[in-house]
Length: 107
Image (tube, rainbow, N blue to C red):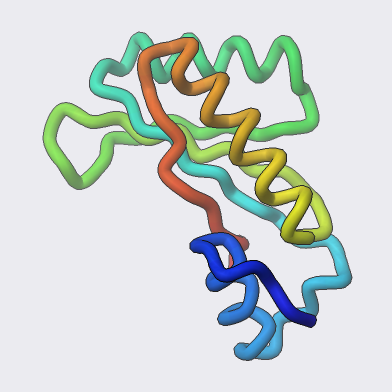
């Protein structure tokens, strides 16, 4: 399978080269960062209300005064679906003064 020459395509290509079957469902995690815990909590509450199939976890980042929100959903990690979800998470994170910080597959 060939992927576009961008960050998402590169990650998917590396996963494929590592032997991960990208045609089956995986737990895909999308990472959001916030400067205040209240902002992170507001995002989690919004997602729980609007998207109950997405599991979110808040935890302090390794960088002081930064909060991570890890949002996990089951999906087949196709390029188009990953890009669409990243756009959605970027919009949601911005709504609460945060930003999307990438994605990965739970091992």
